[in-house]
Amino acid sequence: MKIGIVCYPTYGGSGVIATELGIELAKRGHQVHFITYAQPMRLDRFQDNIFYHEVEQPHYPLFEFPLYSLALAGKIIDVIRYEQLDILHVHYAIPHAISGYLAKEILKEEKNVQLVTTLHGTDITLIGLEPTFLPLVKFSLDQSDAVTAVSKFLADKTVTGFKTLHEPIVIPNFVDTKLYYRMECTKIRSQIAPNGEKILMHVSNFRPVKRIVDTIYIANEVLKTMPIKLVLVGDGPDRAEAERVSRELGIHEHVRFLGKQNALPEILSIADIFLMPSQSESFGLAALEAMACGVPVIGTNLGGIPEVITHSENGYIAELGDIKRMAKYAIDLLNHPRRWQEFSNKARQRAVEVYDISLIVPQYEALYESLVKN
Ligand code: GMT
Image: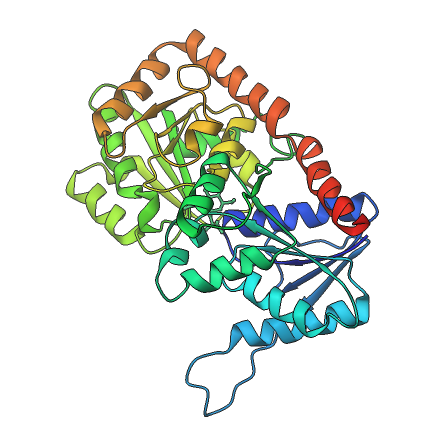
């Protein structure tokens, strides 16, 4: 098939999933066309069957606001027309599903491209619910030929929040467990924790929903009982506040901000516990990547997180903001190496048996095939 993929190319789970999906589809012999405003982060090497089409922003003095949605629709029209796409798969509803619908409608006499929309998170749980966007999101979902959601939680939220005509199909996020596995990284480990300290880790874009300041408070509690290092990977708006709090608590020497990193499997491999204290998380891809590297996750009881982590088996679930409990879970695991090892094995096992790329990508392929046939 000829498949167009529209996504945000920057750091963030939806862009990662869209890019990894495209790469895997290309490996399976499909022709994949990425349509975005910049080269997707993980599309960093040549691969056969992959094409990249950059959306250019028109600059004109009259346009006080950039017209990205229209520029994107225009580029999609070009790609559908000249590349004869069978499928247009848009990731994150705003504005991609709306631009996709517009392009499909404009070309409907010429080419019947099938529009697939994948919902990822705040497009449904937060920004999509704003009165300005709600009718647009609902319309574009009802007009899509298929809508998928990355968790059962998100599918349910879509139906209740948008009264959509159809329930989204749940196709969960995935990880390539051949790339994400626990490796021996003694050098990085000894650089970060030179005295053999245990390592707590968090990876995100440091937006307020991620509650990274909670990770500082959790580390502060754990530090009262044992030496540890807290490693924060990523960057974003809440970094300054996290740094301020760690100084205020006097624990900044035990907190390392690594910034944005590409070598995630290596870095995750040095973690003993992964923290996900999010206030909203439709799935929690970062937690899944950690699990694939054998890292037990302590997360909140919100959104799709409990679908990924099995409490008391491969990680722990706590209430939002319950710092003491999350710290207690971490201390417990770190003090019991045998239990930690069991959790670590089970985390890896769940990633391999439920969420491996080889199990999930065929679900998208089957969906495309059924749409093209019909
Ligand atoms: O929804 C967002 O705000 C951003 C989005 C993204 O592009 O990273 O994140 C969501 O999609 C990821 C991939 O499906 C999920 O793993 C994240 O849980 C989800 N984020 C939220 O729900 C806050």
